[in-house]
Image (cartoon, rainbow, N blue to C red; front, side):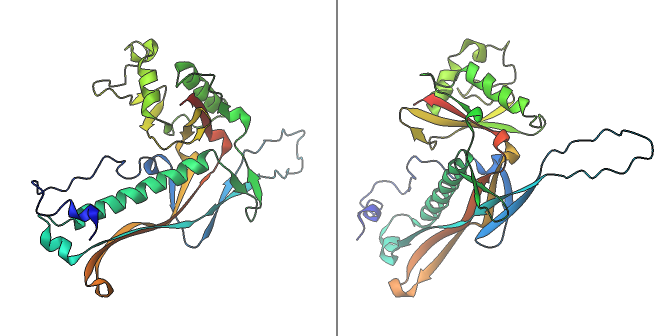
Length: 285
């Protein structure tokens, strides 16, 4: 008998099953462009900036201006989560753990979704007709840690990088960072002062919006030595492709003595659609 299930048996004094502390689902999926796709590989076409040609004379020939085209490749992968609730577990427990198992499954896939988005945000993107050309995030889109956390200077630099690349100021922008960096930023006088940030609510001890960025706290960002790679981006610069959204199925398993199986699956992929729309901000971990 599973020791994890035994803790919920009648010997316990409480009839509640508590989900231990964990990130409940995805925090990033609504901050990126989402597309439903079919198949294992998907392509997304792009149109770049063209240049107007000055007319030189009356009745001149109509010029042909080549509009630049590109495309990004997304490779989709399958994710699963499954566990069994034995029939005896349901009989001997004060409360049926099936619903809690389903919640745990959905939360697990949501966290996996964030991991995929984060990995592709500053990872290797693939472009070309068949995705044959790898593209890295250039150094011009990266801000060095400099032995400090998330400072006002780094946020201003990230904003300048996005603005200078003509990212649409009307499109939502986000910053993903861990709790430690939010604490560092809260300690900055210019940020906590209402003179500098009148739209931010500090009542809950959290930074919501500053310098046009919506802040998303996540503890899942990658480490490079002693530095953590925080991210700033324009919403459509990152893309999440879904062939199958996370779905939870609860069914009986006759082959397992009619135990209840909680199963959750999804098929997803992600890519960075545009280097100019993403900035990596390194901070001291």
